[in-house]
Amino acid sequence: MFRHILSKFAVSAVAALTFCFLGTISLAAQEALPSGQVTIQTADGKSHDFTVELATTNRQREQGLMFRKTMAPMNGMLFDFGTDREVTMWMRNTLIPLDMLFISKDGKITHIHPNAVPHSEDIISSRGAVRYVLEINGGEAKSLGIARGDAVVSKAMGNAR
Image (tube, rainbow, N blue to C red):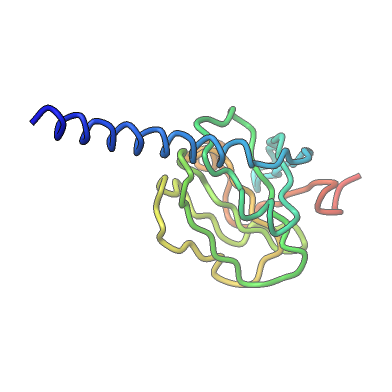
């Protein structure tokens, strides 16, 4: 009986250590991304400046904001897909709710998916061809009055000085 209990404990301990180890690998394997500035100019004339990480390669885009426990206000990640295309996203391994702003090559917001649910594997579509996606904290677009048609300006997008 004691041997059976000890065996179950050992299996549980190994499973827990394996899970922790794999989680550490995921975090350790994350690539440090370059950063930049993005300004969103709303229809009512307000400007909102964000500090963003830039995801421009396949590896960086796949990594995204996975495994992040927090993100400071007015921070985000700008995904550059290099060409206009339909984009689909999901929230696998993403721990924080996000607003996803889908942006055309000319810097106009074409669609906003608010408050994407952490860990969800539901597909989130750009609903048309876009070049960029800006992810910010969930609820931030609404609280700042950011809407479809607003302009996004950034050196990283080639439309700012």
